[in-house]
Image (cartoon, rainbow over all chains, first blue to last red; front, side):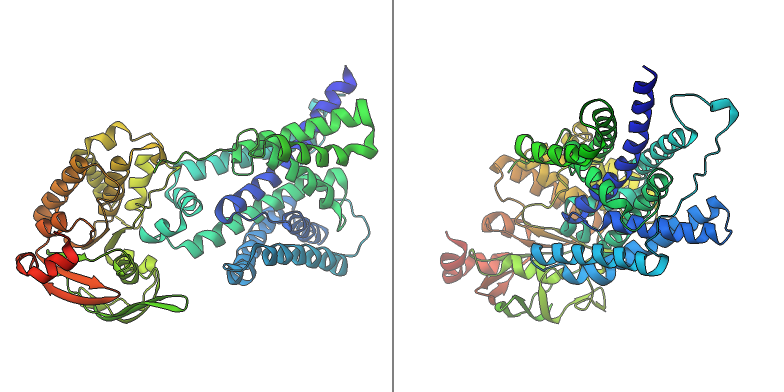
Amino acid sequence: METFLHQLFAGLATGGVYASLALALVMIYQATHLVNFAQGELAMFSTYTAWAMVSAGVPYWIAFVATLALSFAAGAAIERLVIRPMANAPILSVVIVFIALLLIFNSMAGFLFGTDMQSFPSPFPELEAIQNPYFSAHEIGVLVVTLAVVFGLYSFFRFTSLGLALRAVAVNPQSARLVGIRVGSMLALGWGLSAAIGAIAGMMVAPIVFLDPNMMVGVQVYAFAAALVGGIDSPLGAVLGGFLVGVLENLLGAYVIGTELKLTVALALIVVVLIVKPSGLLGKTAVTRV
Amino acid sequence: MRNLRASYGQGHVLHGVDVDVALGGVTAVLGANGAGKTTFLRAVCGLVKREGEIHFAGERIDQLTTEDIARAGIAHVPDGRGTFGSLTVEENLRLGGYVRRDKAAVQRDMARMYEYFPRLQERREQQAGTLSGGEQQMLAISRALMLAPKLLVLDEPSFGLAPLITQEIFRIMRAINAEQRLSVLIVEQNATLALAFADHACVLETGRVVATGTPEFLRDDETIRRAYLGY
């Protein structure tokens, strides 16, 4: 029972990371109908930025906020410089661009920061009061951060007019223009937000998996699985999918298939969802009437 | 609009079209399918590549982006209505007033839209995509009015609607036009309806203006009536 609960909490914590990264994927998908294959590598690069700052003696939370700001700017810049010129390009060209971004960020991280594994600090202290055999302080911290991100995003999209404008651009860019929304700025904003969320995911997972240029490869696959299970156009689905995949991965890994096949579970899940229910658990089939 | 030309990709659709809309007036653009009516409206709002001059309230707007044309006070109800299908009726209306700074006035206008179209109020929490065609057209027009525009551009508001609903919508538009001296530029396949609403009209044929004048003038001209108005 003790191991089971331990695995369950570990699953929820990594699930939170998958959920965040899946949310980042869903945000870009909703606005542009593109799946950003480079999302994970961007997050990895952001995490290295944070690591460089922390190593240089910057206090953790200042480095955290600075990393979010830098990631936001980088995401917006990628939209401006790379994605926007491809607006009318065939989908295959866009996919190639994403793969190029993935490789560029991966090798740039190796070049700038080295390919050795680095340990990344957790900001959540192991307090005496929460010492227990079931979960670590970091796991609880990750859960809290994930829920804060989810709640923050939900409030932003639901209650602010900027959030409403972003949703409008996702639904119908032409009509958004006709009501005076600057669609270009909104797309840049969406990419920036998505990169910032990815950075949070990276900084939360790095203390668990250690920091190296390939750290997000596996996480990215789990996040894809999470987004697809939940429905690629549903933010709530992405969050549920993230937790589901995290828990499944840990429990199956611990009791059924062992650690070697964990990633296979995610890939199998992707294939099954695509065959059985391509719209995912909460993916909307949009209602239209003519 | 002076000598307006517009094109999609390689093909030129408009060849030097001149159309005027008076302040507080209603100009109707008539013509058969494929005459370039929708393209003309899209050119006004910068949704297609265009050349020529467009003056609006003393400013040249032919170099502006669609967003800035909307911000200048031109509200466009596109063909197909262009509502935000998965957003609620209320969210659609809020988006209509997105660029306005005076949020209290936006709130007042929203209440006014619900007065014009009580059915929208009943359905304010419903997804726009689930509305009937007539309700969607009401929503599209209301959303455009939420911009507090100086010029309302309507693309075939009667398309696909039952005659009774069409009449209802035109009755309300006439009231709004009279109350607020709102200028209207309307493209309509239903010539009778459009001529009854407009104080100025022109007929397009393959991207050129072939006749222009008051509704009475167009109605009384036998050739024009037979060839373009279809009765």
